[in-house]
Length: 188
Image (cartoon, rainbow, N blue to C red; front, side):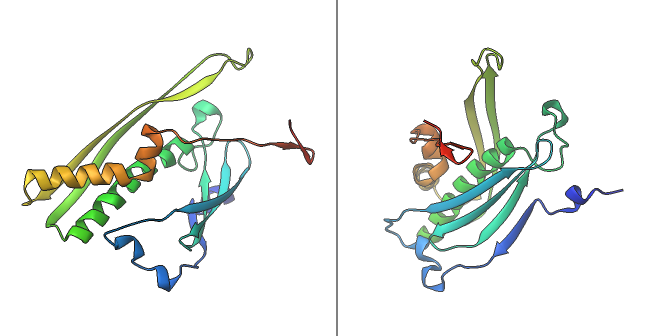
């Protein structure tokens, strides 16, 4: 028997709201833009979480995304874990930037595939308050079918890596702030 939770889609579109005036704007050869996403998330049962994410800039759609953990962390394995979404986002972002470069430069690329290994580590004690997680390494293998010269492919990969927001966030960490309220009062 299928439980109601497992019948719920892992990803679903809640609202369609892209702006036709912005369609194709990221394919311009010169860019100066900022991407803004807004997200609200909540813990559900066991280790399941649900997030509603909206693309504010450029104006985009809103999606609901569910994640879970495997039994090793007390979850039900009903959806991908958060690190799977993170790992996929690295690959998706790089492929987006490579595909954008191909389109802008009108390159002859027959296929582009990616294999990636993303490694994380955690050490310390929950009880002592010393538990700390960290990213260890991201290794990406690209498989490209093309008759373009190697220097053109190298340039495409370099521009793709440099314009991939997530790769750049890994290589050049961005400031991160956590603000919390407890019982409606800001935790100082």
